[in-house]
Amino acid sequence: MWRAATSLPLPDRGPCGARIRLVKRIPIGAGLGGGSSDAAATLVGMRRLWGLNLSDPDLLSIAASIGSDVPFFLTGGTALLTGTGIEVETLPDLAGYDLLVVFPGVEIPTAKVYACTGTALTSALKISSMARFYPTLAGNLGEEVETWVRVGNDLESHARSLCPAIGEIRDRLLAAGAAAAAMTGSGSAVFGIFRGTGAIRRALAEPMPDGHVVLRCSPLSRQEHRRRVGFD
Image 1 (cartoon, rainbow, N blue to C red):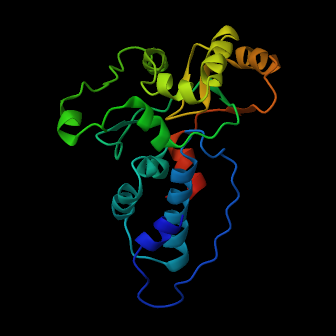
Image 2: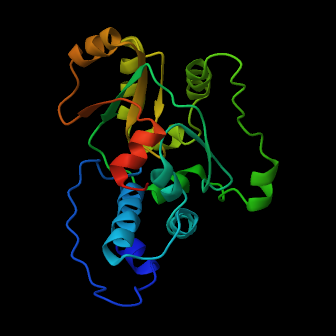
């Protein structure tokens, strides 16, 4: 949030200070983008507070300089992130699904997970040559997303060496009826996709080990997300 605030230009006139109070609802170190969403909220809030003459594209450009997934939290909705994660391509809203996110209570720093891979970060040249996911939209977008979730998260095996509970949670969600499940980001949370409220209610009834945080979520439309963060 501090980096986001100091990345903005100062207003031409009027007060340029701010007092920010943060109430964390997204677990830290879970791979859920909590810090990035805080940064995005700071950009939106400070633009309004200071009355800055910044267009939405201007704000997206600043967001990209702060972190790879910060621009997504400004746009929201169902989207495809490419390049280093700062190129956000909106997709049709994904509805009719519920998500169950389970955080085992173990914070995993992203840098530590990448250190376990023993490989360097992907170069820009290699990124440009990687196969991209293009939804055909010929069928059901939800089914396509499920297919890609089943492909898995390349970081999961490395994160599991730091937190074995990741694999156990994934197996529990699938056994409870999730259509697909995978680790979020660099971990340590795991999400399951459920079709219909009945399936997710049965999953919620399943006991989880002590210390696990269970969050039930539903996808937001892009319009609703932007309304909530005040980006429009």
